[in-house]
Image (cartoon, rainbow, N blue to C red; front, side, top):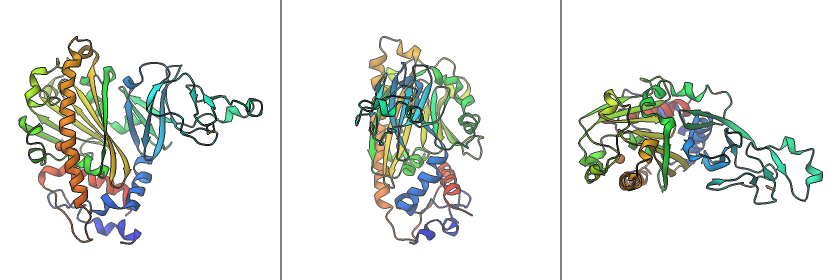
Amino acid sequence: MTAGALFAAEAFAKVRLPPAEAEPLPHWAYTSTAWYEREIERIFRTSWNYLGHVSQLPNRCDYFTSEIAGIALLVVHGQDGVIRAFYNSCRHRGSKLLSDRGNAKLIRCPYHAWAYDSAGALVATPLVEEEMRDKRSGLSLHKLRVEIVDGFIFVAFAENLPTAAATLGSLPKEWSAYDPADLVCTRKRSWEVKANWKLWYENYNDSLHVAFVHPGSLAKQKVTGRQRASHLESDGSYLAHFTYHSGSRGLLEEDQGMALPRFANLSGRYAEGTYYPCLLPATLFGFTVDCVWVFELYPKGPDRTTLVAASLFSKAQLARADFADRADHYYRRVDTIVPEDNAAVERQQEGLCLPVGVSGKFTHMETLCHAFDNWVLDRMVDG
Ligand code: FES
Ligand SMILES: [Fe+2]
C-alpha cells in the first residue's frame, strides 16, 4: 500500500457506518509503522496523557520516570511541594538523567555530573563551574504542562490544549464517590505485550470476550446488567461502561471472602457494581466497590505495548492490620486476568497481518470499540 492509501478517507467508509453495520479499523491501523508514527504525532502528542497518582510521590524530592509517545519523562515532587514533569534529558548533551523511581535532592546527570534541583534549575557543572556560571540560568530542565485532577496526574506536550479538567468533562463528578485524591497506589506491575495498544483498549471495552477468554476467572462472577456510554454520549474525552454484579470485581470469585471493607460513600449504581471509564487515548480505569485499578497503555511500536497495572486503595483500608494479606488477593486477580487478556490480543495481533481487502465485523456488544475506532479515525484521517 502506498502511504497515501493508508490514510485515504474512502478506505474507512465502513468503519464510519452505524455500529450495527460497521467494520473495525482495517488491519494496517495495527501493523503499519507509518500509521503508528502518525498516531504518536496526532494523538499522544496532542492529548492530555495520564502519568500516575500523587501517592506515587508522597515525599518531597520523590520522583518516578515514565515514557509517553517515545519521550522519556521525569516526574518530581519538588522541595516546594509542587509536582512537575520534565523531559528526562540533560541540558548538557542530552543524557537520560534518572531511571525507575526514587528520592533525589539533586538530580545528577550520570554522564558529566551536571546537577539540577527538584524544580529543574541547573545548580552544578563540576570542572566547568567558572565557564558555566552565567549560562546556567538558561539551562533549566525543560518543563511540561502538568495538571492534577483529584490526585491523578496528567501531562501535555502541546501548549494549546484546554485544561485536563475540562477534557475530563463530568468524569470527576462520577468518580468523586471513590474519593480518588485519598487513594494510595500500593502496587504497580508491568507487562510487555506483543500487540498494538489499540487492541488492549478495545479488548477492555469488549464484553463479548469475557466468557471465552476468562472462563475460569472473570466469567465465574455473574454480571446482571451492563451500561455503556461512548465519548459522544458523555461530555468528556472518555468512554465508559458499567457492570452490575454482587461482591467485588477486584477479587476472583473464590477470593470474595478476602474482601476489604467497601468505600464509605458509594450510592446508586456505584454501590452495585463496577464503573470503567476509559480515558482517550490510553488509560483504562476500574472503580469497583472496594478498590480502584488503572491500566496504563504505553505504545512502544505498532506491535508492542507496555501495560502497567496500578492498584489503589483508600487510606482507611491501608490502616487495617490485615491489609497486606487481603490486598494480595486483589493483586492475584490482576495477575490472573491480565495474562489472559495479553494472550488474546497477542493472538489477535498475529492474525492481523492480512492482504488488503480482508475486513472484519463488529457486533452489538462492541459498540464502544466502534466508538473508539471512530475517535482514532477522527484524528488520523483528514476529510
Ligand atoms: S550529558 Fe549530562 S552532564 Fe553531560
Ligand atoms: Fe478481558
